[in-house]
Image 1: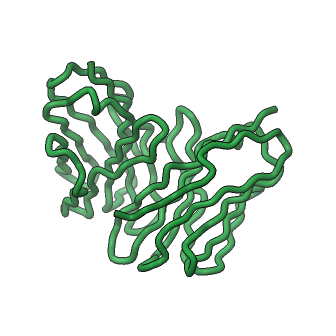
Image 2: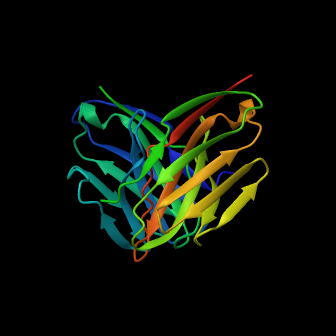
Length: 111
Length: 112
């Protein structure tokens, strides 16, 4: 059974139209991560939570926001998606410094 | 910004060939190194978690070594099979952080 679930798997959104991606986990891990991966590039860390402590990467665009209402759920909100935000978005969880468990990703296309 | 380099970027080998690839990372403040395998249409999965200089880990035909002083790790696949086709990612972890910063990966294609 999947332990890290991302919804939706595929999302098409219009330029500038807000979109929310969700991630849930059944592992009770305290760390959750959001990555963006564009074609043939490394997954790029956008932000991570250690429990409720939010850590934003310095180069994460301002229109990317995140919420973690409880241990199990984490959301990625893109307030005004641009064409350049078309990518795979991966959610991962871990216990501190242990192996990460990934969801299957959401493939976002901005048109 | 942690600079993680993996080489080669992509690799085609024949079934039965052995192969290896490299992950290079800054050696200062090293805590651990993770290797992940990412098959098409699946989630990345952890292969190894390595922490000690000189560490060697093995899982079936796949093994990895770690040199923390010079900042590199090698992943070896012995007798490659088509099911080994995947992208192999490494992620070094710096002490004092919880961040997993990935390299660009090595895309391996094993031809039957």
